[in-house]
Amino acid sequence: MRDLLTEADLFATVLLLRSQTKKALLVVEGYTDSRALTPHVDRQQVRIVIGTGRESVEETIELSDQKGLRHVIGLADSDLSPHLTSKNKSSSPNIVYTENYDLESDIFFVPGLADRILFAHADVDKVEDHLANSDHDNPVSLITSLASEIGELRLRSIKKGTGLFLRELPLQVFIDSDSTKFNYDRLSKAIHAKSKCTTLTPEQVALELAHCSKRRQVRKSVCCGHDLLSIISGGLSSWWGTKVSYTEACRSLRVALSRSDLESMRIFKLIERWSARNGVKFWPAS
Image (cartoon, rainbow, N blue to C red):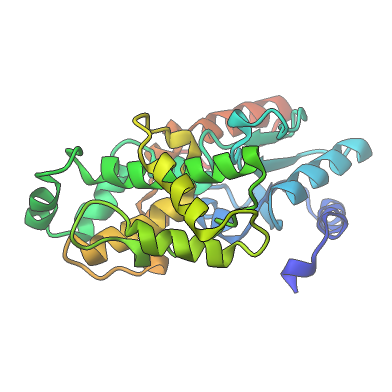
């Protein structure tokens, strides 16, 4: 039923809660964001409201601003906005955006955090042996490089209007166990099969993917959290000696996030400034 909720439904929920509680309301895109942040907010002062994606958060904050609702803030993913002139962010002072693609990628790129997840599961000798003949000196670099290939393909498809559907690809099943790459033949065929409205043939999808895999510059800003976590799961299972599901990788990411990690993230600082402007105690004392 949640998939059928509209932006108006979400705003109605916020409007009702605003009449029932004095707590600040934090509107997030979905359950994974809520699960990541709930252990860290001051739950005596803050209530998290779960939306259905970026547009639902932006629309709800716009309506809240129009109605003059106090102490309502939204947290939305930047997605690929920094790379697309057509995808503008809201200018409301009551919404903050992730520094990277989404909240999961913000957490992943906290210095040292992904290493803690990986080496809590991986066989260190297998990691070192696997990377010895690669261009990467650590597994996080390899994971980021692979995720950026999918991110660049996603961006390229949007700009060219080719209609590729790359959401929630199970990238873990396309890891090539004999290399440090994807199995690009299988992956390109799967992308084409999943993209019901694409204008490309399977051969053209393969060429687009090959183009993105050969980029020398790795941009972490295009890396989607789902892709990073899928590759963690696949890398651990295929290369580094431990079977870890995608769900387990997601849970590990949330558990690994400490208060000091959160304080290093831009969203923490932006919400802290919003709290100071609005007289709200958002985070408990550390």
